[in-house]
Image (cartoon, rainbow, N blue to C red; front, side):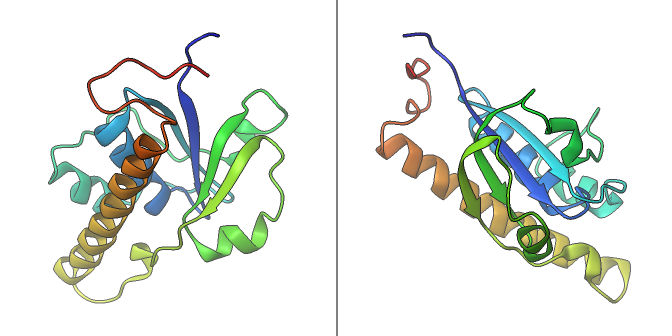
Length: 158
């Protein structure tokens, strides 16, 4: 058997906040054990408060940009997991044949938050923390199932 990492594509509507956060957080917590990507159905720009909320954790988004799901269409990429992080993408993308498992983790859209910049930043932080918790919990589940090695061990054989 050859050694390979499990691949994950996080999908939301714009690839400006939630899916970008999920990508950065999974890379941070377990990027040595996963190939991690994100995309949007209607990509725009990464929201500045997404960058700020992640930089507060020491995560650098240098080189990251909003990507279209179409960049991954056509069989060029085959993902182990498609993780949809918003209800709009769940509704608009009923089929994605280039994945083995489809997960749905809906999170509030922080870019829709109203109020002052500091109030909106608090919403971004809250969503970031929810995604971080979910990602860490999911990584632990994958370790317990033996699908990925525990942190600090060799890559699992697939």
